[in-house]
Length: 83
Image (cartoon, rainbow, N blue to C red; front, side, top):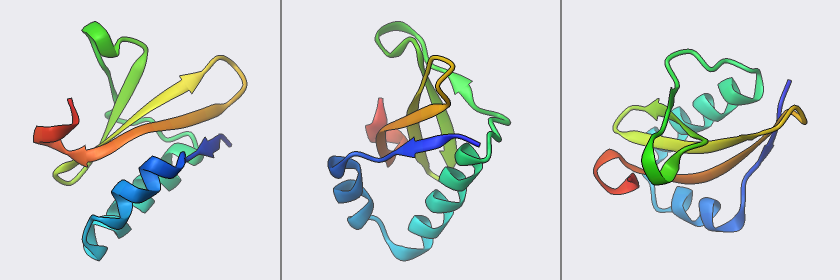
């Protein structure tokens, strides 16, 4: 089981999202917490070292930190805005 760190700016982004998508995003965050990285893709270029999880038309960008089992959420936004 992983520890999830959600910084305050990420919570502010989540508050702007409608309730239906919020529920989907929280389900995907729960998957991350349980270690389910199925279909997650590593990002390239300046985002190297970070990963992306799809949640409908939203993307959850996260960083796995070493072997400490900590996941830090970096950004949650619409697909067209997140990169």
